[in-house]
Length: 184
Image 1 (cartoon, helix red, strand yellow):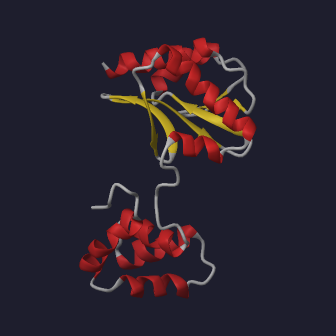
Image 2 (cartoon, rainbow, N blue to C red):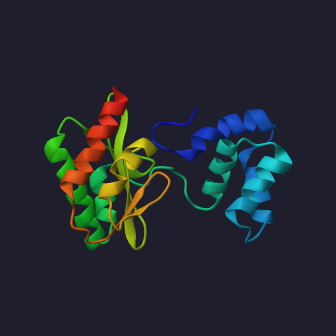
């Protein structure tokens, strides 16, 4: 079982027990692939050696120089990692929601800021190079507010908002209210 710290090497004892070889052996196998891509490295371990996705990912990511799955310990760390325009918009999104829903906890999950309560995740945000994605964790919620989204691009589970978006607090809070109703 991996540690809560996100340390990928926590998987190494289980990998060695299951596959009968030391981690150094598997790291050499990955090194022998040279400049292989992530999918090629994963395929080597999963398809040729029977690794689970979790164990293969732990080895490949450590081999690629990412020893931890946690990039941001706190929401503040996440926001600090963003360019100034994205940071302002992201913080404004969460401020608008938390003003009406202070009972929600702002946490880091999947290396992104999320709002949750004791029943589940309510709202999340992710940053891409030229936009932000907001996620109400429900396609039903997206369908219910689709008519209010105007020119915003709706994807399967997210809404793409531009950097510098004038935050629509009423829209965001409608999404949160609908999601909270689902979680009851």
